[in-house]
Image (cartoon, rainbow over the protein chains, first blue to last red):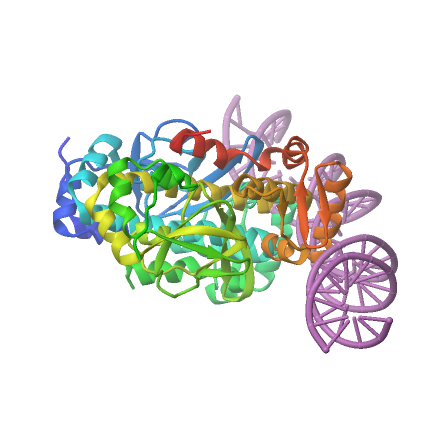
Length: 238
Length: 238
DNA sequence: TTTGTTTCGTACGCTAACGGACTAAAGTGT
DNA sequence: ACACTTTAGTCCGTTAGCGTACGAAACAAA
């Protein structure tokens, strides 16, 4: 199955901003995939079979606590990649990565990925810079969970999700959001009602449409923005 | 100022488990430092001047939110190092790193550190494995802040602190703990009273002595253990 | 000893969020 | 059209944790 990927057509920012030589190194191994909501890309303890570079859409990194307790710790979209463990020379993680907003990805299997990393220092450096930004996102998420209200965290989450999806209508149930934020389903319902009354969004059954990012940012307050600024600083872009 | 560091005398686990060749690469640049509680090793936006490998004691990585909001996101001790941003090819972070339990560290300046990284693939791989474990710790912290009570989070924090210090008596005020956990000072006081009544620890003015780790682990429940297990799996050692 | 400062215990009223549950829609399948 | 399932809105009593504040220790300095 030969693919004729053209770098500038790719909608993943990490891949698009690779230098041509590094992209050529990966090109032959990249396979386009498509995932529905709920698809699982990595599971705790299972070795990471492949790395995904998402195009518009959104993935969650979910942390688990030994008992069933779980919550989202990080968000990945077209600005990033999965499989950072491989980049760090580790074969598995205690996390789950799952698809929240359906998306296509460009997949490369672990073997060729490692080979490409070995072969190119600039590739390593490029991807490690993203790993750094992602760790800032994780730290910021810890801060938000400790200090911000459900409403603020909802606003933050929706902004981050909207940043990564190209749809206006995000297919998200209250139940799903409650699991990600680690709060009650009813808490999401009432939180969303406030956001809707403020004009930030419209809710449908099973879906949310962002209407006014400015209002969302006001509500999110300082919970939003730090990792985004760091991404812009380190990995550039518009 | 010549130093005669002997690898097996060093009480930082990352340095002690380096292969001899990599240690030799660093040896000439390592400088022993000593820090009091409250010392600041990194500040937001300032470029990271040096990397520290702590010996027994404890450092906090503190995340900031643009308004003054702040909370601890990660803990670093003799199992790890500061300056992971440098490892990832980035010169500064939006975080603060500060000393919570006085400790000595082995410092290496950014320049020589980068040179050593360039020169040795095994050194890079060794330190990157720690970066991976640290990101697991960040994710787990986010989960805990979302889902566990002050009491459980206190127990978790004290266990992690005790893991890294060799003292029985930790010099910690309630005020300090409240800032790190992002809760009220009075909340820490009442939480600690419960832990003390359960026999897990003794409190003094300005200090806490761990007395029964088993009790602490029971109280901490599933909030403690995931990053620790991952560290053991990836970086070995008892 | 006296004075001032830090740290800690505690208390009161309040709010955010919880657990649980029930109902009402909106959609699905037959 | 029908029953069935999923999703969402709402309500009630309860709890964890908040903001604030005041007083009592423990300690430090004069």
